[in-house]
Image 1 (tube, rainbow, N blue to C red):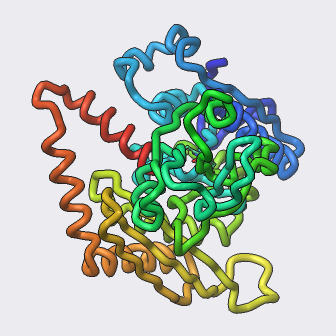
Image 2: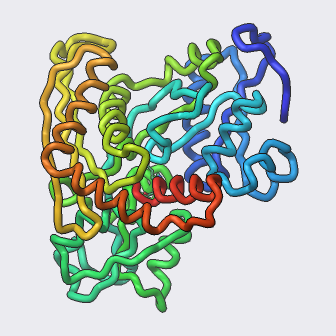
Length: 363
Ligand SMILES: NCc1[nH]cc(CCC(=O)O)c1CC(=O)O
């Protein structure tokens, strides 16, 4: 699978390899991107490569350099940087707001419905969180969801549910299972062809979804001009503008850590007849919630924007306003708590893995 090529000077026979994790959802998403690339560039050739932990560890020396503990985006990025693959397909919400040196986002595809959905156990007739009896167990491993819902639903118990989507649904439906319902991103279910499992949506202002939720991002090498050009056809500018604003907000709020941040974004072109990117009205609401759910800061900005730079500025401005309105205190608390938990005997690499894991769980 490994090959050499020179960036910007690709032979016509070059096959562009798209890579992702090997989960069913990741494979479906990668196939969506491959099909879109193939449709836009019929004379080019595209293939896919799915990486599983054990298999790849034996094949790529570089994975050993990571000590076998790095998360998947990191391992994929190693393959990307080594030119073993050309594009990485990610759920944008799992992509850190700052990418490693030499990597960048080449395309953001049109977003699926970004909301979170309630999936009720097979055979139960409850429709919404309000319907669930006191003491019901709701499965979700996302601190963002728990933090936002805890206060509004004090009678419910929120419990971890891990694994890929199929595993989580199996745990939900198991006759001996503890969960009455679980909360999942609607987009993942829809892409897996299981949109019929959505019992109801949980929308803002009850639950603000994760930054980037529902959108696919394609990561490329920054110096790969050819991949960059190929990716242009995939980008849905409205999604890109919304997600860039969301990611700019999160980048400022994170300040190196992971926090329960939610968002709701809309974009409305001001010139309805324009075909491409055009001056638009961006409405973005950000939320930051204390882990206990006791403090919740929400702010909405409505701004007209003309390009991605404007969009980044709006996201950053929103983050600063949230900070001034109480998010700073929430973030300082979370940081202090995390510092006190960090084992003194942990290596830097281990601390990084813990931080990355916390980032993933926060989403
Ligand atoms: N954190 C895991 C993850 N990453 C992306 C999705 C769903 C698809 C998407 O949001 O694009 C999910 C599952 C979930 O949160 O239910």
